[in-house]
Image (cartoon, rainbow, N blue to C red; front, side, top):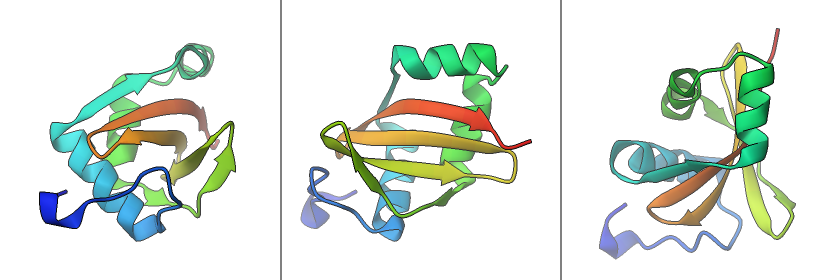
Length: 100
């Protein structure tokens, strides 16, 4: 996102704005994965590559406020990835699961 279009990630973002920010972060930002998401990935045999593909191309649902931050579900036909923004250039993967 350019400097002229600052986004306050502490506020609820529309799915469209969240989608644009996610793509921007995937291209040139920082993505971290919390231990819970790592455990879900291991249990469910989901690779980091699978999650990155979902972040690049998935549909963003309406956010939910949980544990002090807005959580965004990014869904593809087969996978769901939940993220929270830390800044305009950083997001954290919170959880993931297969939709089989």
